[in-house]
Image (cartoon, rainbow, N blue to C red):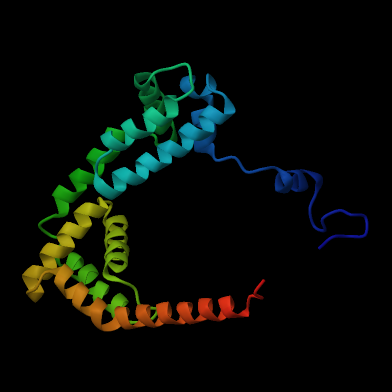
Amino acid sequence: MIAATGKIAGCNANERNLMTQQYIDPRRQVARDSFTGSRMTDSQFDEAWHIAGIINREIHRSGSFITTLGKYATAFETDRKFNKDRAEVILRDIYSARYGESMNKTREGLLNKEAAIRDTIQPQALHHARSIGDMIASGPTMPFYQTADIAGTTMARAHSITESGAKKMMAEAFERADGPSLREYGKELEEKHHTPVREAARAARKREQAQMQRSVPQR
């Protein structure tokens, strides 16, 4: 509520100042104040910060980072006064400052957790695998590749493992318990439930586009 004086009702001056200050992620500030971060321009730091996030996402997805690091280091060093090797060092430093550990440490942590739970994870893996069928069959229906990704990501985050590892465990558990491969099962349900919905939507879009074209005045 704003009072007639223009002040925020119920707030003192310090509280109002805090409310109007821009939030700064503590991790970002640590990275910016680090030896590497403090020597960069704002644009260089912003780019390195976002690349670190992309690399972290890739590690959680696939359990690997070397290819992604090399690709982004090449892009990062373009038009700058350092080479690819230096770019990789910078990205590694910013990653470590942002996540509190190295890229390899993140990778090892996920893979070690996978190895530790592999023999006991089958019931949970089967649960997540069967959820794929439910997502395909119920509305709004989705294709197999999307539902498999959702299930794999959900399982990976619940157990702190890689998404690729989760998907592999799901496929193994499903085949062991229910017979056909998880992909075959998902594609069959996709053909039955999702494909008709997709084709109907395509037909509707075509009709709409044709109607719009007919309504455009001819010159």
